[in-house]
Amino acid sequence: MKEKYYAGFMTERPTWRKARRAFLKDMSILVTDVLFLASLWWLGSYIWNDLVHQTRDFLSVPWWIMVISVIELALVWQSFGLSPGMRLLGRRLIDEQDGPWWISLGRRSIRVLLLHVMPALLFQVILTTRYTPWHDRFLGFCSASAAEIDEIRVPWYRSSSAIAVIALGVGMYLASALFTQIDLVKLVTNASSTSEIWNKIFHPDWSILRLGIRLLIVTLFMAFMATFFGVIVAIPLSFLAARNLSHGFIGRTIYTVLRILMSIIRSIQPFIWAIIFVVWVRTGAAAFAGALALFVHSVADLTKLYSERLESIDPGPVEAIRATGAGRLQVILYGVVPQIVNPYLSFTIYRWDINVRMATIIGLVGGGGIGQRLLQLTRNWVWDQAIVLMLLIMFAVMLMDYSSSRLRERLN
Image (cartoon, rainbow, N blue to C red; front, side, top):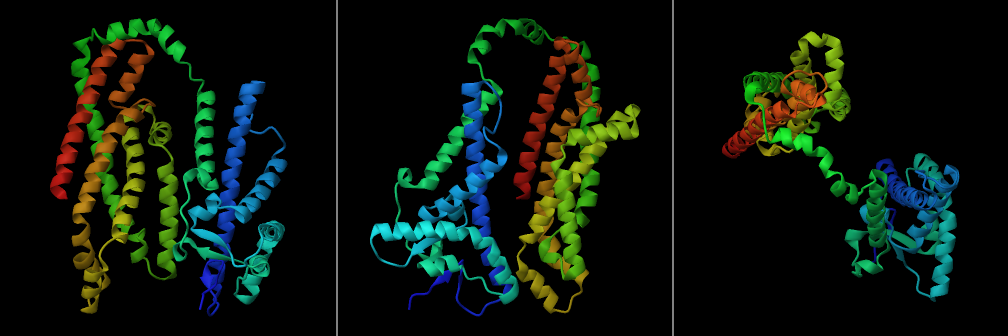
């Protein structure tokens, strides 16, 4: 007997979790389509306003008209074609009734109208623990998973979602080209204005070499201290931020809070942290401020990497050791740690490599090291000395790249 699927789950014993997931999946499809169409609208409006009206506005009509329009277009798209949201989340609309095309066209048009009340089905989920898309069942449609049906492959130029993705890519390219004001003519005609810079670059002043080496050593030590203390803090935090090791209400609460906090810290660029710590510890301790900035970002980044490795460990050894009656600490020491030692070392070396690069960048905002002196030289147009510092940075980065790659190969 043919199994019917309504909103992503079979008609079996209802539970609140299944109903909630089915409802949220349908709403996620709608939100995805609305955001996709809104992006197309914004890009199209920007391109039109820039080319026709010479203005940089992303909207040509009031925002509420745009919102209503993209919602209506999304509902039409879901009823008459395969929208990006349906393709992305693996849902397909199946017409179970045979008949002339004009009858199917009418039923799909009615479906567009009935989809406006879909958010109200949340009350059905809350009150009855069921989610039944009446707009589809009434009109003879059903929603099926893409993996459960034999879908006929069509060329990309006959797929509305593929055409829309291409249109979005073209729109992003055109809008980016207009926004950045790319002018290849100026790139050629104004090349002579950089002649003084190139002349000094090809005639370096090696008198700053000794100072540059000393500043480079400071930069490398900044990266080392940030990585060293970052590892000390990130390792215990990673066990608390691993989902498979978080049990009970308290464990899940700590896991959620840590994940959110690490995501926030990681999203703030190291040079922003450098500015904060430069003000915090004053400019006399610039290298200390730079090390603190790298330390904070290293903790957030390493905690994420370490915890994700913990979540992918083989549960077999853990369960075997736990079955012997071992305590939680023994399970971690003998079942978890042997599986993560090499990946942790590899992640640590990789992070040290990143910190060496970032130590130069944060020096540009007063974080100490060779980057700070490089900024001073470039601001004063002392390019003959600046090129010496840049060569030292390039040499250090290349050496770190080679060393870290060889170490990771040995560890893996």
